[in-house]
Image (cartoon, rainbow, N blue to C red):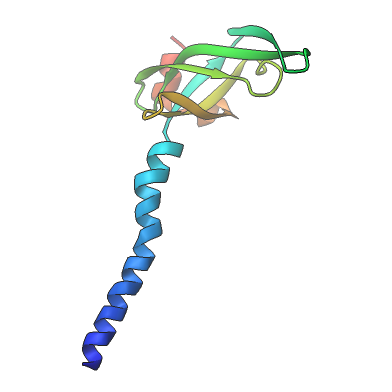
Length: 125
């Protein structure tokens, strides 16, 4: 009887500990992570000027360019600067692309020596 109670208690504890792990794997990973692609920023943006609810102008800087994963495979990336100004030209970016949502989740500037060799070869073509 006591052994059976310990087994059931252990099973319940294991299930409680597994719930966050399963949630992370089946909800968070597909919705908020993605694959890394690398690209080079030149002056390839499109400036869009729109008005907010108060009638003030605000600018967006949209980018549409090819990125390459660590194996050199190509993906067309569409994203904006999210800075209120264009991204500084002549920089390499690491872009996280989510396939489920078909969108760029984030980007960050990286030094040239951190761009994988096959990606860099494709960028420099």
